[in-house]
Length: 251
Image (cartoon, rainbow, N blue to C red):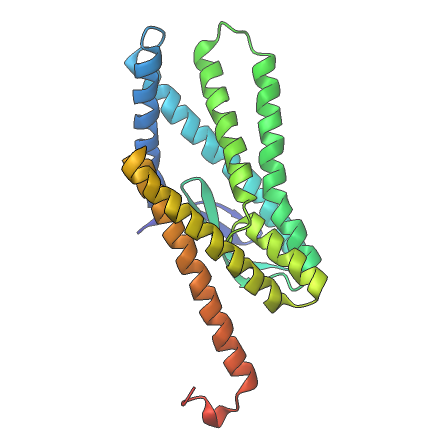
């Protein structure tokens, strides 16, 4: 699917994926429906849609701003980045070279959650000094602060390629002196956590909420596949390191 470039900093293209547009419209519709259901006596239909669209576009702006700072730290720690693509609620970096030391990776993994927490605190401060009569504005800022806090907490989960996963892997790498051990430990955590999420998702499908249960189950499956794939890559790397060229075909 197509992506659109919105920035170019330090020679790195910042792009927005086309699925962001589709999902942002869906998000705005969900927010609008929720506002109409809970506060139809306060907001008109147009104001409900405004709350949805304003919240998601301000969220994208904060994600891009935080990613700029994160990218600067990545460059300082020796990473070479080809491009950055923003998907819904996050960004994926395509790199040419990763940071080659655990301390640098620890710094990189802490930047985004710290910035999300800082953004949350700033938004809470704005809410505290806002006139209570500005209900529309207050509703948007409150929703935005909740989403930013959610992203900060979610990114700290020690799974996969999330910042929490990179942090966990880098700490094990630093303590053990082995990057491979850090990857194996992270894959074990990711696999265990994903299995729990998958089972919880199945429970929600049949007992609580079908859509939420499906989302959790899919998240669990993605985590399981991610852990298994990286373990396979590690096995291939070990074969390449420990096997002579002549016997590679058999392996």
